[in-house]
Image 1 (cartoon, rainbow, N blue to C red):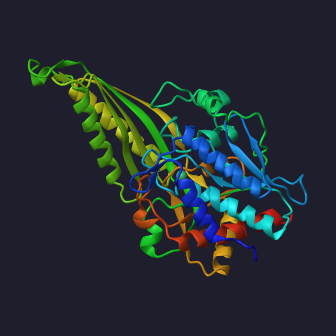
Image 2: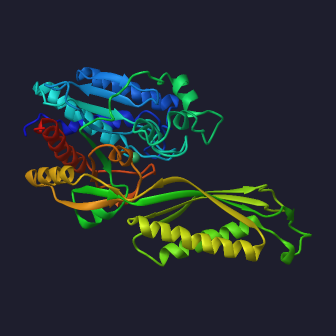
Image 3: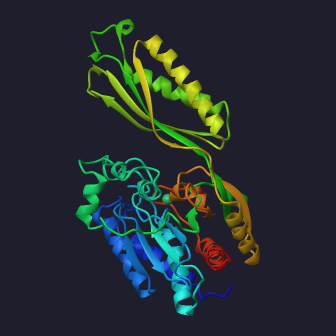
Amino acid sequence: MNLPLSPDRLWDNLMALARIGATPGGGNNRPALSALDSQARHQLVAWGREAGLTLKVDRFGNMALRREGRDPTRPPVLVGSHLDTQPTGGKFDGPYGVLAGLEILRALHEAGTVTEAPIVLVNWTSEEGCRFSPSMIGAAAAMGVITPEQALNAPALDDAERLGDALTQQGWAGTDDLGLLGAAAYFEAHIEQGPILEAEGFDIGVVTGGFATERALVTVIGKDGHAGSTPMPMRQDALLAAAEMAVAAERILLARAPEGRFTVCRFLVTPGADGVVSGEARMAMDFRHPETAVLEALWAEADAAFAEIALRRRVQVAREAYWRFPRVAFNPALAERLRVAARRHGVSQRDILSGAGHDAYHAAARMPAVMLFIPCHGGVSHHPSESISREWAEQGLRVLADAVVETANAKV
Ligand SMILES: [Zn+2]
């Protein structure tokens, strides 16, 4: 296909967006529904209007920028990602997928090419989960995976706000029905956020699915004590028990290496005062594995280890899972469309699984969905030094454009 795609314009837009919430060291700090995220959203709307796109916003702040098809009754083809970032985020995690989608729609607009089905560019609200927990709330709510109330009441981790309050405050509490649920397909391009593609010398990754994931809050209750006068055998030290549990869980995972992942994402200690034995510790723990059954076995082994440690250290332990995905499988036909497009452009490729969560996981629960990865240098992401080459950005754009437009023109 000969769309007048402009990889230079895509790059310029990425750099322009990265000036909103720029941090020292070349990174970005644009938390979901902050004033800076709002500014980035307005920039996207301005670019979209230039390309003739019409904007709708739903009650969760998800943005849909639509280009009409020849047959407006056909279900749309979706392409998108997110504009929010981690506090120590880079320029590309999220924006690459949104702006690559924008560039496709702009090229269609300039060429005067009308696809059969409409194409809708989506910016999902609050993907990162660093301000409002859990991650990917906007996509989950739009796809009916969580209730509207769960989404709007999602608490902020750093202040007293709820997601619903922040939407109203920043002016993104929309009233539109985006009509996404019945969409024909969802495409998301993203940086890999891992080292595999670059290390193996591939230009793109066709993402066939994602790791099964379960994140849980582990609460350990002991007893506060004096650091000087409480003899060691009498202590109920929640911090040390929790630390031992964290190390035990890592050991359980490593016994099944190299496939899985284990992270203690947060570790909070109460009272956390000098001179005091900690009476309470809370950890957000995250296991991931390509196989759902193995993920369940990992948690079962961890629970047994936690119980043994708790008994021995005379503390109580409780675990509450709050973020869970089975193994995600993306649509094989859409994946094949990406492979064919990559071959057509002479772009080298391999199939890959995603270890990270993405908005596409929720879309995949409701419609055929697929992701395309481009490499990032050293696998570095969620860090100011996150970087990609212009060549990678261009190759991903060309492959994505072919697959999106072909899907929008496919016979139904
Ligand atoms: Zn992302």
